[in-house]
Image 1 (cartoon, rainbow, N blue to C red):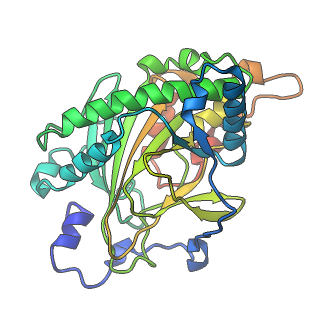
Image 2 (image 1 turned 180 degrees about the vertical axis):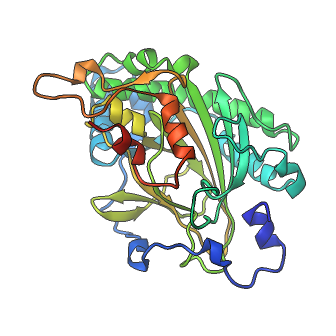
Amino acid sequence: MFSVKGLVESGSLTVLPSDYVCSTSPTDLVTQHKEEETIPIIDFSQLISSTPVERSKVVQDIGHACKEWGCFMVINHGMREKLSTEMLKASQSFFDISEEEKREYAGRDVFSPVRCGIGFNASMDKGLHWRDYLRAFVHPDFHIPNKPSGFREIAKEYCEAAQELAVELLKGISKSLGLDEDYMNKQMEVEVGTQILNVNLYPPCPKPELAMGLPPHADFGLLTLLVQNEIHGLDVLHKGKWISVNPPPNSFLVFAGIHLEILSNGIYKSSLHRAMVNNSSTRISAVIAYGPPLDMIVSPAKELVSENNHPAFRRSKYREYFELQQSQKIVPRAFLDHVRL
C-alpha cells in the first residue's frame, strides 16, 4: 500500500501492522497537559507596530521564546482569515486523489521538487510512521502538483502570504539577537532562498498507543511556520516534559530551526517536537521551512562570536543537511552534532 490513508480505507485493517509499531518506551509517550506550561504567544500586530515601545517589548518576548522554548505561537498575523483553512482543505484533497495518481509524485531523491510517501525516510527507518506526506519546494521556484484542481492556486496564495509573515518574524528574531533587523534576510538571502512545504496527514490509527506520526525531531532551516486543523496531536518538549500544543484560533506555530541555532551560535535552540496519533480523527498540518539557498554557507554570525565566545559550529552548506538526512533514520538534532565543534 502506497499510503497510510489507503491502508485505513482498504477495509482490511483490524490490527496495527508490525511495521508501524513504535519502538519508543511507553513512558516516553506521556504528554503533560498542565495549564501553567503554555507556549509563548506573540502578537504580530505589535511587531509591525509604529510604536517603538510595543515593538521593543515584542522583540524581547520573541528572544525569550526562542531561548527558552525554541517556538512560539503567532496571533493577529494579518493573513486573510480563511486562507489557512482553505490551504488545509485543499491539501486534504490532494491525499484524496487515487493511489495511482499519488505515485506520480513518489520522488526518491531528497532534492526532488515534489515528493509524497509515508513515514519519514522509509528506506532507512527500522519502523514506519503513521503519516502520509507531500513535500514540495515552493521557492524560489514553485513546485506543487496540478492535481487536484484548485490545489496549486490555493497553495501559491498561501505560500506567498506566509513568506511575508516569515520575513517580518526573521526581522524580529534578528533584532532580539542584537543584530540589524535585516541581518538574517540579507545574510541568508531569504528572498531567493529555499522554502519547502510539507503537508502531513495522520489518519486514524487502530492502536495509537503503539504508533507515532513522527518521532521527536527538530526542523531544518531558520524557522518553520505550522498550521493545523482542530485535531490535537502535536507535542513540544520543554524542560524534559512533552507539552500538548493547543493553538488559539487563526494562529501559527513558529519553530526555531536547526540553522537558526547554528547562526545564533547556540543562543537560540531548535525545538524538539513530535506528532502523536489517535483512533478517531484525521489530523492534518501544513508546514513551511524557510532557509537560505542550498549552496549558501551557514555558520555562527560573526557578531555573536568573540574571544570569550568561540564558534560552537563549523561552517556548512545548507544542502549538507539534506544530504545527511537522506543517509540516515530520523535522529533528534543529528545534524547539529555533525557540525558541532
